[in-house]
Image 1 (tube, protein in one colour):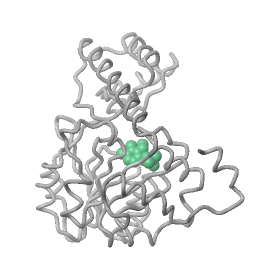
Image 2 (cartoon, rainbow, N blue to C red):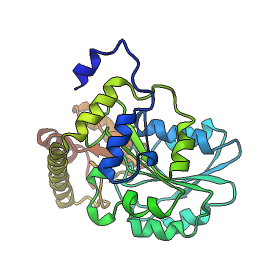
Image 3 (cartoon, rainbow, N blue to C red):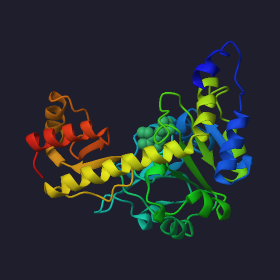
Length: 309
Ligand code: PMP
C-alpha cells in the first residue's frame, strides 16, 4: 500500500486525511467529528499544547513520564506542575487531581505509562475526573493501548462520551509497527477536535502515512497476532527477571522497566558494550523494549552478567 501510494507522490495528499479519520472513527464506534489524525501522536500532543497552553498556564503530569511533556509545556511558555509516581511506579491520581488549579489547562497521563509500563483503570480515571474542572483538558495518552490488559477498560468507550474535556491519543507507531511513517490519532468531543484541528500543520499526515494507516486497519487480525506474540515474550522476560530476583512494576506496555538507581548509567554502558541497547534514565533505571525472542534472550543473558538486583 505504501509503495502504491508513493507512485502518486507528485500530488498533495488529502490535507485532512478524511478517509483515515472516517475509518478510524468507524473502527472505534465513534462519530468522524470526534477523530483527528496527526504526525504521530506526538504531533497531536504538540497540537494540544498549542491549542490550550498560553504563557503562565499550568500543565499537570506525573513525573518521570514521556519526555515531550516538559518540552511542549516549556515551548508554550507554560509551567509544569509535576506529581511524583507512587511506590508501585504508577500514578497517584488523587495527587494529580489535587495539583489541578484554575490555571491548569492540560493534564497529561500516559497509560500504559512510559517508561515504567504501569496503567490506570478507566474507573480510577473516572473518579479523578469528578474532581477536575471541565475547562481543563485531560489527555489520556494511550500510545501503548494495544498491549494493555482489557480489564483496565477503554477510555474511548467509557470516558469520552460523558467527559467533553477528555482527549485520548493513540498511534499506529507501536502495535501497528508504523513508527517511521508517523500517524497518530486523537479522539474527543467534536468541539475539542475541531479546535485542535486549527493548529494542524497543513498536510502533516503525508500520503504514504495515510495509505499505511488505512492498510493497517484492514489487517487487524495480523496486528492482534503480533501483539499476542509480544505479550507472550513480555511474560517470559518478566518471569526470567523475577526468578533472578528483580522486583518489577505491573508492566502493561511493550517494554519492561528495571529500577537501578545510581547503577543505571554503568549498567547501560555495559549492556551497550555487549551490543544491547536499552533506554537509560540516569539515576533511576532502564526501559527495555520487548524484541524478538533472540534479542530478549541476549538482553537477559547480558543483564545477568553485568547487573544484580
Ligand atoms: N506517547 C507516549 C507515552 C510515547 O511513549 C510515545 C513514543 N515514545 C508517543 C506518545 C509518541 O508516539 P508517536 O508519535 O510515534 O505516535
